Length: 287
Ligand code: NAD
Image 1 (cartoon, rainbow, N blue to C red):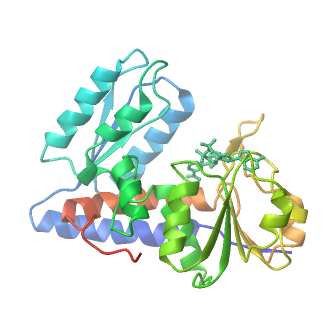
Image 2 (spheres, rainbow, N blue to C red):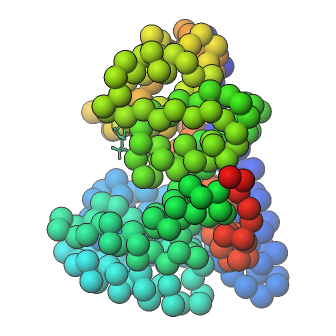
């Protein structure tokens, strides 16, 4: 069977790094602060915000949640983002989804203050990433790389196949892998012969939001498979995009829950510290 790749130990070590950095920042007289803007009463979003706030507290980060409610307009959300951009005490800004119906999500992503864009939502961040410039990548995409690094999976020259081309996961992940010298293929819902493409992968990343999409047939024997999918199950649990049958073939497989998702929050909080240090968009990514 495939070797499991849990995210717990990595998440704990990232959190410890953040806690130490926050303590050092506080001793030096500054206090890193995360702000989250929400405009929904969606329960899973509320759950995520609570878990983020509790993780921030454990790391000693200051936090502020701006609840605009499910009737907020594009202008109200934009004004809140602008205010946080101008607020010198705030270092990281996250715009929570979903947004109210009729609200212009694209325009608002552009309104997330670029220097505080700790979850890589602003298209400027993705553009910088694509250009090989330093930027905050979306935390989930970076968590995948962090997990691969943690388990010492070599990326240089490796064939990486990403299933999913969303702006939050697939595309930024493809750029992060390119920056690490992987040979990258991106698949999506219109890809012909998905099995043929995914079977080429040394590293296969499933980020489609389709439970069971990746089966044993999609996996080259011995390949490293990272499951980014977080699909709700009827019993209130979570399941990934990778069918359990793939464990027979894969060399290693990250679990859901307990894999990438565990690392994501820890990456996000680490980004807030970097934003507070002003090192978020100063450090070079290779082209
Ligand atoms: P999305 O719906 O925006 O994008 C899905 C992508 O998958 C699209 O590019 C689509 O073309 C592709 N796709 C869909 N069906 C396909 C198929 N049958 N074959 C090939 N490609 C197909 O989703 P997203 O926001 O990128 O999220 C993807 C998954 O990752 C979801 O399950 C989501 O819940 C999860 N996610 C997890 C975390 C985390 O922290 N672990 C964070 C964000 C998203």
